[in-house]
Length: 226
Image (cartoon, one colour):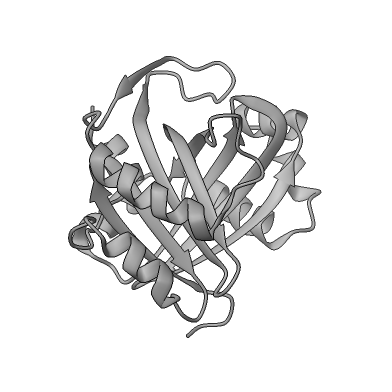
């Protein structure tokens, strides 16, 4: 396995399956400490793509190596903003990120690239190079409700994402245009991420009623929705 890469498996489940899996996970796993009283939180990601729409095309044609950039916030707050680079190699995933301020976010959205030159971080440098050379620009907002469970052995995270919405028009995390539903209310994306091995106790829980693994991409669904 490549250093620092994690395995990532995805399934499409329904609300009944979610209830069964959740009831089992609650007995063995920790709830994400960032979750609210209902054990969930809102995730909003602004995805960038180049002038050739490589982020979408690479996924659709099945390229084994892919890379995407996004800016992510939680519960529509600017208290914690991060620029993230997500690299995929087959079923392995690597995420590198750097925290940014609201002022830096606004500068990027306004095309003020000088703010990126001053940042000494690999993610910033890579983002800046693609912004200049391949015209990387904001393309879509991916917005959903997440419930997350953590199992320390194997560094496992099990997430269930529902109420997937996408942007229409303006792509700004803090001044959104209209958000439209992308998936049916009965469709929930189950993701399992782990390092090295997936403990059998977790594997058995998620296989119960979860069906077969699918090539689910919330980003691709949202880019294809309009």
